[in-house]
Image (cartoon, rainbow, N blue to C red; front, side, top):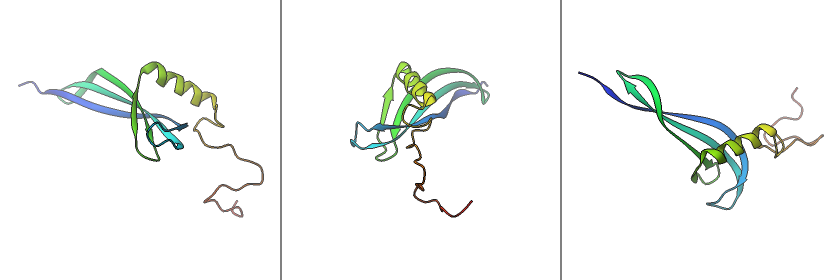
Length: 105
């Protein structure tokens, strides 16, 4: 008896600030990579499907994107084009972000 099947792996590559195509809000989007691997006797052997997608953290809308666009977004995140690598707003001197205690060191 030979037991075979598939197993999916989900990788979060980056978090970027973009305008959502679903809700129109400027919000954080996660860039994700889903890899499906062929398994034999529950051992993953080789990937046979790789898909990329972005998901809005505000409304939950998800959009499949091609590998080239995912590579471009990943390069933008690494370069920190919108403030830093994770898409958060840059800190201004003397301004405390919400949820942080300014008196705690």
